Amino acid sequence: SVRFMGCGRTEIYGWGERLLCHHEYPIQGRRGKGLLRAYVEYMTGLSRSQSTRLIGGYLKIGRIAPKPSARPRFKRRYTAADVQLLASVDEAHERLSGPATRHILKREFEVYGKPEFERLANLSNGHLYNLRQSPRYGLRHYEKTRPTAVQIGERRKPAPNAQPGFLRIDTVHQGDGPEGKGIYHINAVDEVTQWEVVLATPRIGEAWLMPLLESILQQFPFVILNFHSDNGSEFINKTVAQLLEKLLIEQTKSRPRKSGDNGLVETKNAAIVRKHIGWGHIAPAHAAPINQFYTGFLNPYVNYHRPSAQAEVQIDAKGRKRRLYKQWKTPFEKLLSLDCPQQFLRPELSINALKRVAASMSDTEAARRMQQAKYNMFEQIRRSA
View 1 (cartoon, rainbow, N blue to C red):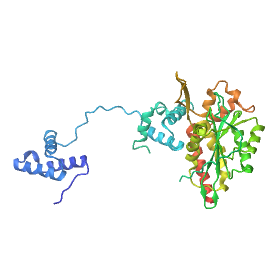
View 2 (cartoon, rainbow, N blue to C red):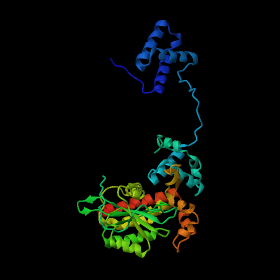
View 3 (cartoon, rainbow, N blue to C red):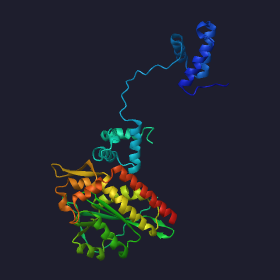
View 4 (cartoon, rainbow, N blue to C red):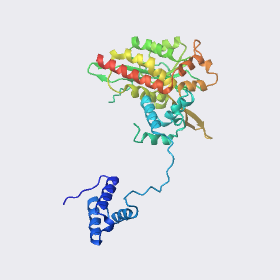
């Protein structure tokens, strides 16, 4: 047999109302009413009790209409425009964690004075994920570091004591290709402020690496006191040791079976380098456009406009340390929160000069500018490949 079903409640109710009206259901006899009721049940797939309730409503008010909901309805606080604005911010920053995104939304309204962020500035962490799930919300290749037995640098974990200038540095390899090895990213992160500088090099030999290390050290706004790396031979060698000795920078290296010694920069390798550059092979010839992107766009965005979790260390009665991540600040905000931050800067820099750089554009504007530059960079690499 053939059976027809309505697509939804509105269609079923409309069809049933037209049927009962056409056959003048109220004036039908008992047999006619029974036939119409059975026909409604068969065509709509409704149960006998449901059909009786709908027909009763038709006899009472002359039409079939759904009952209004008796559930309490709360006033909607965040509009569709707010959801789209949140989606645009997530697109620009490549969807950071909830606390980091909330900090950006708050800064857009309070620091940069953008009125469209007024409601989102007070968005809770839980409801942020609710909005992300709403309908309107718009291969890896690892190369292990080669160990070295050269006795350069002291094996110990640096102790910055809330003073910037203690760098954690690591190398990220951009995969192998048919023509050979890909480029290498050199990632350096300050332990206290999480100020980060990333640059790329075609090779990690001394002729390529030494000028790059000097450029990295110069891009930090404060005086560098410590240089900490793992035991890879690209950093544990006499040439790097002589450079650091000339600049009066202490060199340390990670201890065996202590993965946390260089853990900070390892997390930044994934959160910054891999997130924005990816895992695919990039030939060494493309190091120049990548460095232009790093120096002009990614490094300023990360240091002035991208919040990071700042650890608060608590020591209990037994002397055990516990790290709590309750504060979210950009590296520049963290630098400003230190006591007398001017004393840590290089002589030619001032806090006001750094503030002018930070205030030149909002967080989301800097993120969109960085994303456009990244798109242009990959287009340039694709055309020249």
